Length: 257
Image (cartoon, rainbow, N blue to C red; front, side):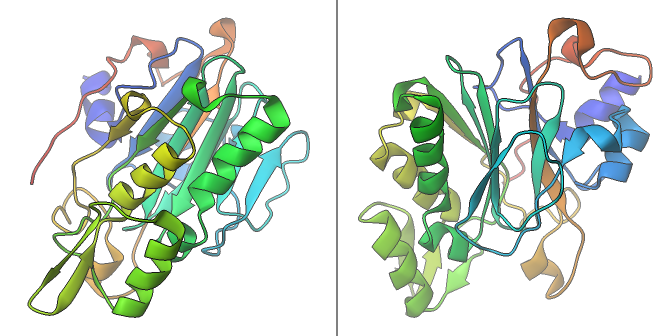
């Protein structure tokens, strides 16, 4: 019963099934609060790292110091800790280099996308850990999609400058609609990530207010869901109240579009 309840709270991306990592996106019932993660899943708040998000293009590398710093992406090789980011329409992204054992969590709204934060993250992983793009997996969690995300031309122009050409925006009745998840997919591919290494949730946060927090849906401040990833040694995995995380089936999703 507990496993069933927890599986309604999380989304496990299909492309991040490596035995040594735990990767998931949370939904509204669980949200992205470390206290709620501890209460519902049994993950100690001391083993969760969240940066101070400011819609920047900054990437930080987590080593020994767990003091929060301003950044919108985190990468690490450190084991037995969850790194994560929080969102409420922006795109949550999880990365894993299956050869070098590097994990990453990225938050990208339109500003972060225009700053190329995913490209910055991939570049830092490759520069610092001698990774190659072909070994990096990227999962894109639920976000507001182009069915609901209309923007001004100045916003679109900034995203286009960082992303280049591609099928990630459209114009309808003189209004521009942009899909940030798809824009970031194009940015990942431009960095050499094979398309088969990418997984994108099809859920729209704005279309599913019962399942996700959405800033645009509430038209103001709201809660947050999160994206989390960690590299765990097999004898020390994350433990639920009575069940080992590895016992959960990977990849369950509910598409409601």
